[in-house]
Length: 484
Image (tube, rainbow, N blue to C red):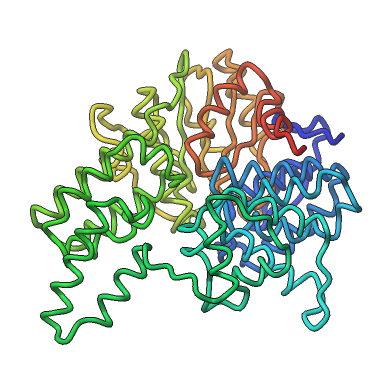
């Protein structure tokens, strides 16, 4: 069994990070989990999507404990809602399982949504087998066949992918699932080419476009379609969040009902929507301009975000939250850092610091909303000087939470000396949470009380609380997943 340490390895292995600065190497297991919990397989400041996929492949091959690799994929998909990166890893594992008995159970459990199967198979066909003469592992076929038991006719129709290169019917013809009472009719219609996805929000709006005879007619039909979708809750929570602009502009009379859906605690908990998605939606709606509908939606997004992170743990003692505001953090990483920094600050009334070339304390009002606190944290660009954190820290902290991509620049050395001096000056021995928001694969601190974190889910907060009691909390949580 592999040794996955959420504390840093005792072996202090110096390496060079992607920015050309000095860093410490992660264990392969820690690097894999960081990548899985942070990567959306798109281009980043220091890394493009193909490099990410290549790193994922190399890491999965290096780790001898394939059960841990498989469990990590399930954990990232099921607990953190990560999709594309887990699809790629699931496909990569087809050549690494060597007939493991639990293989079929893995390919069942890594499927959370119907189209997880078509995405995994698409990657497999593109990278893992000959397209003209594909060979499909039995574990994948048996796992996918069992996965169909989770889905009903509506879900199968919604993700049938008739315009995709790999269609759901291709999966059915490959794995021959045993129908259940809830999907028997849908599977039969799918194979016949007669399954219609008339109940999805996309299909309803598409039908509206075909029925309209004029622009005025189209506007009215779209307005009515949005009203029906929201009133009957036939639009998913994430789809609602992504279409708020359309609802405001095309169906303003539906805004009240949409806001009621947005703040529904049960829908929020079941949605698997990552917290930073609320911030993205908020920013998009803010661009529309001022109106009652816009203001109502902004209030609802604020309330929904407060619900989504209401279980953030309260830490004992003094806490410092530090946000990287350097140039490489611009974009999604900065959105996530400022959001989670605001969440932690509000929940714990803790000190906040930002750093780039230098570090500075920041003031905020803990009575403000999460979104208001987030907006007060500005990104300035510049270098990434971790040393400045400990040079500027002016009191004893019980924990220091650093939100960064962990990329010190060329000519840069790690902050071990400055960290040691800080601890000596204030008699401190804080827990340090090194929260990698990009999954680039290097660390800055080789100390015993330092924990490497990754991921955008609010579940990370629970892991932080556990780590102060159990230094192997993340490893234990992943390893607790049952494959059989």
